Length: 345
Image 1: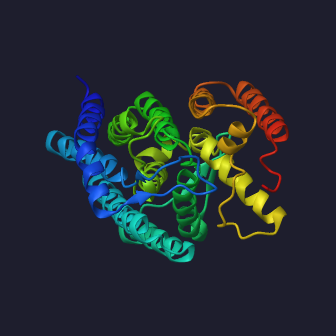
Image 2 (image 1 turned 45 degrees about the vertical axis):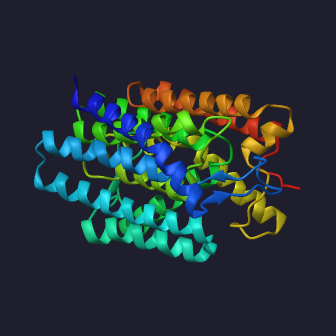
């Protein structure tokens, strides 16, 4: 059985097995998410499920490290990714218990990103445009990489609003990058994304509606950070950035939802970190979708983004341009139909 399949299986099984203990621990220590006017659940729910996701991921990485020899560069990047991801988990755990101010949480995210970028040299040195030309970022490489890491960490965090939504979207994005990595024979990338996918799928048993536990910031920030990090490691630069648009497509749904949240809040004259009920999942609920229907629809949208990302790596420039045109047209139609760029009430 391929090593990436083992990584998926180990992560999923460990995530499944440890979740009851995480639920028990959350209840005993008061890590509970209380309902309020913005949230859709009606009673307190444990909210540190990210610990189970992290445990599953780490189990898969340890299993992989014991069975696969890495060169020095890949060891450096993998250690950096795991260490900085662990810092994000610690930050999220503190936030789930203490509800840190947004600015302090952002500072912690920047610190974790700095560990990966400055401490381990993982950065976006170049990207390729849709026409195959290289664009070297030079002095802009460090701030661009930091922005990508912190930005994507928060996009997954912001989309975590319905049972099973963030975990499912992260799993779909992971499968997308996994398939592209396998196509290019980058086994390390495949293993890490398989571990993320497996841990997310295992968590879904306890998180799909009605959720027994939420991932909390512990999980959502970890998933966002790891997906952002794997897309800028040395190995995946020639995979996920075959075209500049590919990693954005793979993670298209949370990126778009966050982008329109910022537009909506700026237009409404409120701080961009102020929560609202204007996210896509809120809009779907307001027009009559149930929680399960809204989540499943967003899974389909994420899968279509993922298929588009995969297609962009394998088709001609003309077909790629057509795919981009169709996706942009669909986005514009959906935004206007649901009004997710308008200020929320």
